[in-house]
Image (cartoon, rainbow, N blue to C red):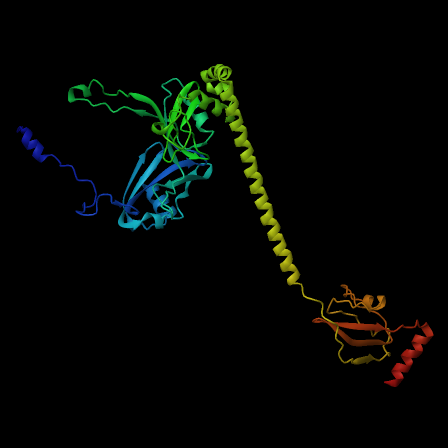
Length: 438
């Protein structure tokens, strides 16, 4: 048996086939971002059936359900798609052409898409709530309704559940509370030693839907916690009031406890959530009774001002409602059409001979259901609609007057002459006379 060298075996072995793909273009392959003109955008997926979504998104679902069905693109417009995760599932879409994302997504900043699954129990439909990053409104502001909030200063002495509870007083947490990690600078020799090590910082981040501004400093469970997010109202770090920074502050001392006192007076939270600050504030109020009274008066003044503003807004609303009601009443009075005077036209009498027998009768059929005030009870009764069997009346004389016209409705005034009651002999005689006349 002939031996085969290693090189010969390698040459004769089957070479791996390249994976299917497309040729990488020389130009336009990387992401392009020049203000609103882009060839890419990122979609955040926050909720699934109303609950926080922590799963993954397949490429096929991203293309079919989001790019084409939900956002209205054509499949041929897509150049690439990259699912990812950044506190919540994300999808980066790259398009072949550059477009204006502010105009394209003006009404699609927040959207939802559906995914239907067939199971043994039937079809299930899941709803996913999403948002597109970086879309700006007409005034140049971002339409992204969510805000990344950073929490510093807990120093591993505050439970994450307590931090979430405090943040929930100001909005809805859209993601879990995540802790920042330290990126260590390691040499090639140290990489093996530190492999798998994760060093955290005690600084937390979360994405929120804010309902009201979060103060820059929060006295959480005995710790002085600092909050960061884009657009936050900054405080002076000496007197803890707005309007200036520490360099321009004229206060002679650090008034942190005075700030905590004001915060506790205006907070709906129980004092137990403030931790050791509760005991320290109790002692501070005894020593600084004047400052506490001033803070109390300040909070009462704010409450009175808020009540005044609410009453003013209520008064404005009532004034607008009254003005609208007056306008509606005036329009109703102006649009009232005065009643038209009655006009009489030429009378035409049509007399029906009174030779009808008991087998020949006239059915009173009123075509217009308009009753003139001058009509008698008998004439009204004669104009009732026919029943299923018909209403037959024996009449010896019926006079129909085409009389007055009220507005556009013509009324027929009908007078029914009294019909005498005939006995059996009289009816026989009348029938004989009728046959004889024929």
